[in-house]
Amino acid sequence: MTAVEPKPAVQDTFDSLNPATDEVVGTHPVHTAEDVQAAVAAARIAAGWWAGLGFEGRADRLRRWNGIITHRLAELCDVVSKETGKPAGDAQLEAVLAIEHIHWAARNARKVLGRKRRSAGLLLSNHTATVEYQPLGVVGVIGPWNYPVYTPLGSITYALAAGNAVVFKPSEYTPGVGKWLVDTFAEVVPEYPVLQLVTGFGATGAALVGAGVDKIAFTGSTATGKKIMAAAAETLTPVVIEAGGKDPLIVDSDADLDAAADAAVWGAFSNSGQTCIGVERVYVHERVYDQFVDKVVALTRGVKPGEQYGPMTMPSQLDVVRRHIADALARGGRALTGGADAVGDRFVEPTVLVDVPEDSAAVREETFGPTMTIAKVRDMDEAVEKANATVYGLGSTVFSRANATRLAQRLKAGMISINAPFSFAGAASLPFGGVGDSGFGRIHGPEGLREFARPKAVARQRFAVPIKLTTFARTEKTDKLVSKLVTGLYGRKR
Ligand code: NAD
Image (tube, rainbow, N blue to C red; front, side):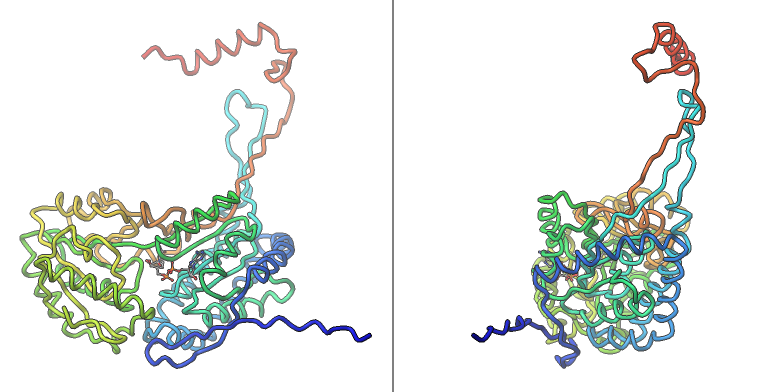
């Protein structure tokens, strides 16, 4: 009798394409739910070993990884440019910011998460109280394509520094970037699969959500974020949601208008506007509105798709941008640059829209293309009111001299940049994340480290005291004493 040879399972694959040319950049497996479960099981074992390295051991590996990324930056940027279509300089900028974050997380993990003494309070003055942040175990990271290095590493780096193993599912548009990052990490951590890659489409991401990980860190659209949260509820898996935005930039009458116009143009058009914290709406004080608009239009005339920014990475986004521009124009808006014919086969001309009604799609929905609306406001109260009137609340930019901090406090957003664009994204010590439909939870900074750790509280009795509170042997005398003590301490009549 001849044994039937088991046939190896045929694995589905998919191609990642260069969005500027449709050339195939790479071919990757479509990982199934079983593949994802196997990765999570291997990660569980790796997590114990990685946690055991301690803060210093992990920091050493993260620093070595950073060394590789830095030395081979051109190689990484080449993959980023090929898969997203962005210019080499922009690819380098996001990678450099990510390098800064790896450095920060490695350096600060012990300080933020290590054991610390707290006051045990008067009633427990015979105790010491300590808290330390322990790793969660295995973190699933699901990433988008628009900043395929900076964005997922905002979760991956902080999760790793906190002592977790990570299973990473990059966007189906940028699997090659994900693979490059995971492969280079394995060069400095060859012992266990501490950072693994699973590739595929939404179904592979959904499998990761259901695979029993200890947390999901998702960055992508609000619509997918809602699906992930609903699926994660089934297993009570906690989630961080870094979702979309409709970020405003507000310009006060005393602002540096040249700097504000430059920030608006960069903020709206860089990376073809495919930036979660991209400037999509601008509100300008009426006293400086005309001057500001002239400056923006003049600067925009020097911005050329294919030179300063690349094609739309995701072809389906072209329809969204076309719809928003058409709707704005149909409802009385005017295009000062770009306009009805701005959307080509791959590239979109930078489009400055004015007189667009506040309830139109171009003002309310995430466009994610190289467009901006500019509206005139009577004062900064109106600017704040309009800036806050969307379901989103990711980042915001304020240009003002006298009132910048006060205006920043009033804006509904997780992050504010004053008198420069996107600054908060470059400061590794600052938490990154939004409110409302932009999501919740934070990556980056101390908050980003704590997001991937759980606090453990320990109270330790140092010596016994005669007055015992937590015993059935507690006496009436003790109760009276406690009552007296608490009245003396907190019982102020008014
Ligand atoms: P997307 O939501 O289409 O996809 C993101 C990831 O989710 C991809 O890896 C995708 O395969 C996966 N996915 C899709 N369906 C899934 C499901 N049902 N379960 C699990 N995973 C699933 O987003 P995108 O188009 O890749 O990215 C663009 C969006 O990301 C924009 O809305 C942008 O604003 C947002 N974004 C937000 C931030 C932030 O930090 N807040 C940063 C970058 C991008």
